[in-house]
Length: 284
Image (cartoon, rainbow, N blue to C red; front, side, top):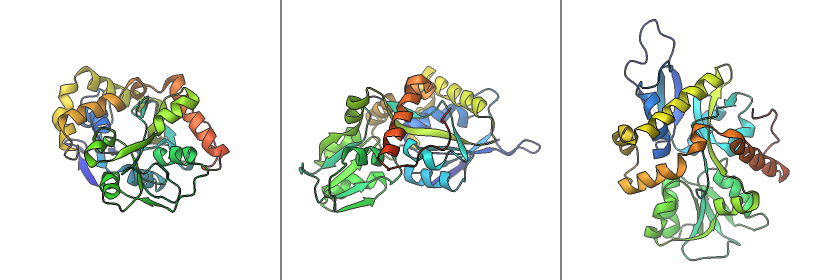
């Protein structure tokens, strides 16, 4: 995890900068580049922390940040303190988590590595694998999951992000695409990551600021290139580009009715299965 203070964000006489916590993944750095580099008109000053999604979910639980990227699966535990922004998140089609093995097709009695217990990936996995008797579930940083499965430490791994593009190089096989599974049952996009703002802040105004940042990224993709690569954890440029194209889309600009429907459907199904609490208040 790292913390950056952007130049000029804490000038005497100005309000305290807002704290923002996002992942170092290309979809987040691409989307927030303009905001973090002073290119969004009338945007508040911000400081930024980069962390793995499981760490970000934990930071939100501890109310450490004003703005924070979290898993949609974590919302039932967070909405008392945070409000959902309509921009900056990750939803889409063909972008779901994968269940990978080194050739095994039956997960009964399997040891499974996951990226976090309150990630959307794990929530989808629990819905998909309902009734399967697993031997163990362990949380690993997502970049360690594929090496651990390849080494035989785990029978299966639940992967996210750029692992969709790189898992064949580890000699692994996808036994399930949870995005395809979700879309086949709901016809809705898969809701992965959300942007939350601390309650008491102006949510609509912050949604507009984030939307402007995403729009500027779309308008000039080359502007964020060096910044994105600097945080991309040694990804190849073609993988970075594919990652951005998959996870940054029209839902990143605005959730819209379809995006909200997808989130509501996921959390309603999970609550009905006693996997998450029922929402104490509406999303919008």
